Image (cartoon, rainbow, N blue to C red; front, side, top):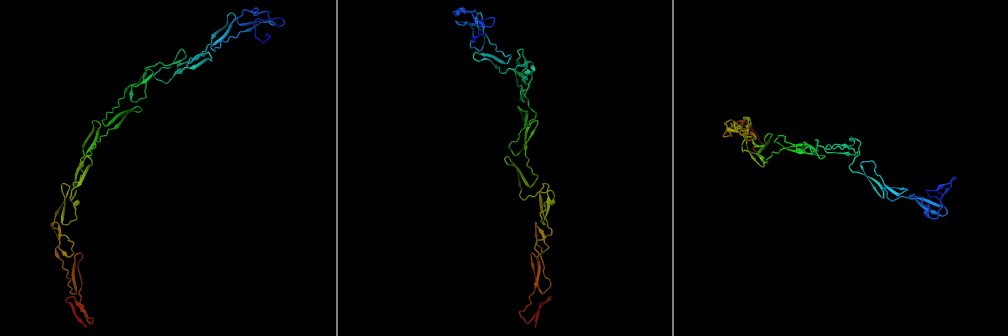
Length: 342
């Protein structure tokens, strides 16, 4: 047991447990031949043997002492058994284990699946996933390519998709997200006097706009900027039947010609000229002419007759008043006013 509190080697114990130290006069007297002790002479207590501290201040070495040679070191082993860390040692801080980017540790290939169809997931003998490239078929995500294949671990687009639908009336294209597309071809030529059409086999065609409105009483024409025009023909009446040509004139006979236009031929029919003071009215050269003058004589000598063109014949009493209040005036229908009587 070390009585002075120091770790010591080479002390001998007596039978009762007391430490027996060799006597000495100088430090050399205490040399125990052990390079791992620091030998010294204590003139009172005798020889002391303190353990040598073997610390070289390097966290990357394991320090120890060889009795024959003294302090020695062995490198510290920093391996953590993880193939996906880079094990290193810093003399000041000791071991470190930095993760290796892109490294995946594995025990079997299923742990290495990366979802890339262009690589084969392999668990190597070193316990690290490997991804060798393959040449499998794949989909590059572009609907406008066909026959995509893997190359150097990535999917490469194949040939461009053929998007011809065989219809000359559509413009064919391709959308990378949805694939082939079609849009109608516009055949509009900007000419309002043509009928623009599209035929699937040949494409756009244009034919003349007839502009016929079926009305024989209009002049049909076309202007490229404004289109069809139908100008009425003056004094023209269109028809299908003679009744369509009735102009309300009793002095004309209506007819519908083969060209669909009306004709009005003069007649000599009886008519009414609208004058109540004529009779025997008749048609001549398309006009109604008055016949003879109406006779408005009512045979009554006590009336005066007249004729109004709108109303016809009218009569009013003859004035037989002689202006003498002392006479009685009278009238005889046959002879007229009678002599006054007192």
